[in-house]
Length: 397
Image (cartoon, rainbow, N blue to C red; front, side, top):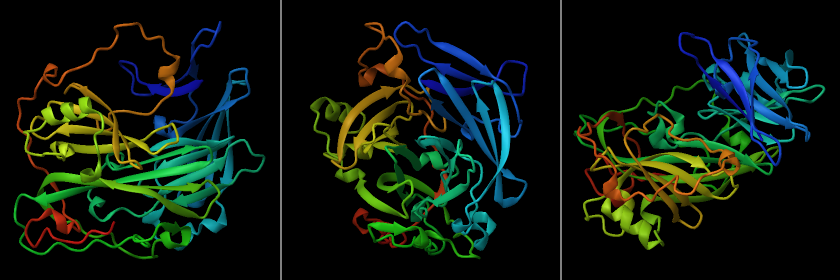
């Protein structure tokens, strides 16, 4: 199992790339340095990996725009057999119709790279869509798959990892989006503007032509209010790699999630103030939905305890069954904008007995500082959450 990653060394500004290969049987694990080739792809998100054969050979691939020409890309390909990089020009499939829309809808730098089966790789811009290329084909071309449009309350987010994720398993691409339920802590001076409704948002199928953006349109201006987080909802879509539509798989909101394991329920209850009753997830400010690599509808989420932002919870939720599958507590020292990444590496590691322990809620350190509300957009609102007339909007779901 080869795995590529990047790293920086003290005193240097450029990055080094390595491929780690886990050991199996009598074969020892190895770490291989990759020669640098083009400084433009200096991020780990730019490079995908393809395993080739049973002898440990692999390819690395990076896909770059050719200047400002959306019709052509440059494919950089590294072969472990030759230990060299090659490059070739790759055209965009004309059926993608990217030239017909405003340039702001073009895919930009990828947020992640995914394997789609065989020698197919996908470069995922979580805001816009997926560039797909068969990197080992004799005459490769690039296709573009648009993602469903942002949910109404998500136009203000800076990091797509906080609300979106894409994964592929068995030729099926899955996409998840989370929308937060927010209420203003400061009364606005005017009515909020209504976000553009995404095409087919009431439907269970979104065809590619439904997702084509207009030639000229500005994104809705966010209404900047001080906010308070009170909940969330999620939708999972899927499609075949060579399909022409997204199909709604399941949807769930925080108040529908059940906690069948008594120990999990006790843990979540202890994190709150005891006033949430059965809605124990109301005590948590949740984001970063990450699809399970097992191909099921389990999603991992990171949550911060509302009343004590020094304590955090990692949750695995089955959104189809609407149940909590697993919980883990972790402390305030592990704070990043995207706190975890799915990986199969753990099954190759030898974990000694006693390396982990069952954390209790009171074992974790507490934060001293009080959380400060941040400005964020206020969008269409659910009518069942109460609040003022500014908050009550019927959100499509």
